[in-house]
Length: 38
Image (tube, rainbow, N blue to C red):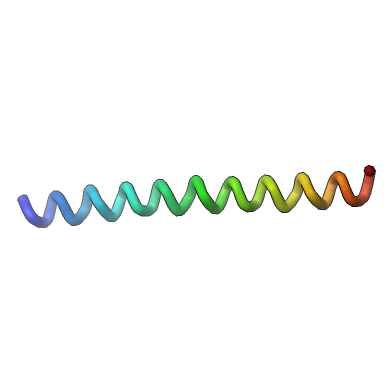
């Protein structure tokens, strides 16, 4: 049970990290596009 909870927390944390990373990457490229074409 403890092992399952740890794995669940790890998966949730990884999902949050992936979402944050995607948001930062999108914002970065959006800034680059606006800077180049704006």
